[in-house]
Image 1 (cartoon, rainbow, N blue to C red):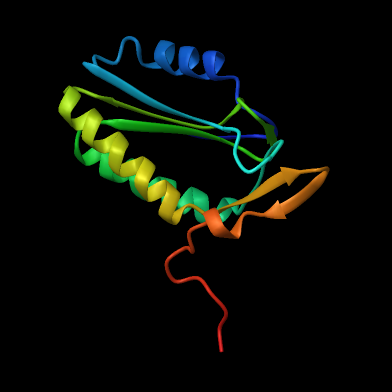
Image 2 (tube, rainbow, N blue to C red; image 1 turned 120 degrees about the horizontal axis):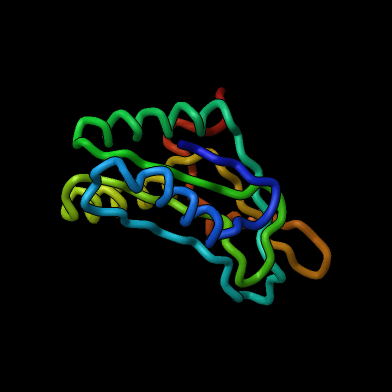
Length: 145
C-alpha cells in the first residue's frame, strides 16, 4: 500500500489504521519508521515533489520482495510543504517473524533515500530552495547527451 498526501502526515491516524487493517492477518511483527522534519540550517520546513509513475514502480518492486519473505510493506509520503516537527514519511513492515521485519525496514528506508523519485526543497524565508547538498541522485538519472 502506497499513500501520497498533500500535506504533513497524520502519524497517529496512519499507523493506527495500518495496524487495524492487519490485526487479523496473523503477522508476528509490525515495525514502523516515521521520518520527521527537523530544525537545521534555519529552515522553516521542507517541500516535496513526487514523480508518481516511477515511485509506484519502485514501490511495487519492494512489495514483491516483501511478498517473497511472507511480509507486506506500507508507505505514506507527503507532497508539498511539511513544516518543522511534522512527518513527511512513514513506512511499515508486517511479517511473520521479527527478524524479517527489522531487516526489511532498514533495507527499504535506505533504498528509499537512494532511489525514490522524490525531490526535497528547503522552505526558508518564504522561499522554496532545492536541497541539492542533501539530495541523492537517482541511479540512471541525469542529462542525456
